[in-house]
Amino acid sequence: MTSPKACAGIAVCALAACACAIEDAPAQAYPARPIRIIVPFLAGGPNDIHARWVSRHLNAVWGQPVIVDTRPGAGGTIGTDAVAKSPPDGYTLVAGNPGPLTIAPSTYARLPYNVLRDLQPVSLTTGWAACVCLHPSVPFKTVNDLVAHARARPGRLNFGSPGVGTVGHMGAELLAAMADIRMNHVPYKGAAQVNIDLVGGHIDLAWVALAGAIPLMQQGKIKPLAVTSRSRASLLPQVPTVDEQGLKGFESSNWNALLAPAGTRRDIVDRIHQELAGQLRGEAGKQWIEQGYFVYARGPDEFAEFIRSETAKWAKVAKRAGIKPN
Image (cartoon, rainbow, N blue to C red):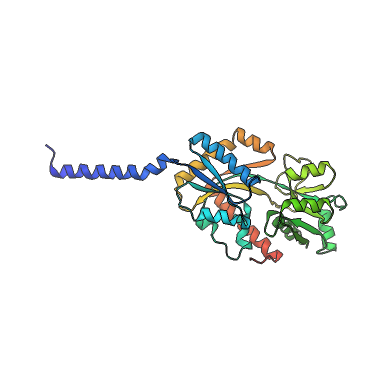
């Protein structure tokens, strides 16, 4: 016959086992309901395209709906803030890119979130280069030509961008900082108007996404000077990088990523990353590369360090360019 003390011990062990099972249940069951990915930009852009790829893949492997929720505004900070303030349960994610994550801390005086305090990096997935493009009347053939011209005529070269604090703006300012030159920034309200004015000869140069640049190059309406990534772009292999042309270490690429609210369980974060990284190391990765993208597949810790280094880089560029947070 079991003693009362032994019975009590068995009961305590049983309760402890139940408690552990209850504690582990959320991770074991995840995902048990639909997941939402907030895209903080307009539909149809690279950020949205990437989020829809993530949605299709996770839905296929997990059998749960993965809903893409577009919430544009304020340079991507509105949608990003919504995720930063969401429950850290793995069911609300944000499709991230440089603007609201690594540039906004230097260009917004009152950013409503702190990136690495309020958000958990999950996966840095893909990236893409832009092309430094010129109007055909501009006589430069190399980055060195541009630098020599700008040094002889400070502030006379006009470059366009989709707006203050965009990758197109900050990338050009990074080039200017590394070359120790001054150029005149002409901000627009979007990339389409930048391209129109570049073709029309109203500005001298601009950062143009490869997908938009290639047709204009083929028509002779603009000409390429350099690509902005560290390595050459697969869609323009004949065009050298800025780094190759003398500004060693230059890189100004856009990228796609996924983040969760801070405090999200690490096993959930790792599971999401592993699903995406596995795809990117296989056929999906080849398809992204064929479209002109780079494949990163970096996990939470490496992505967090990348955010730190990129934030510091853009802070220096913003200070040198005299960009005042607003």
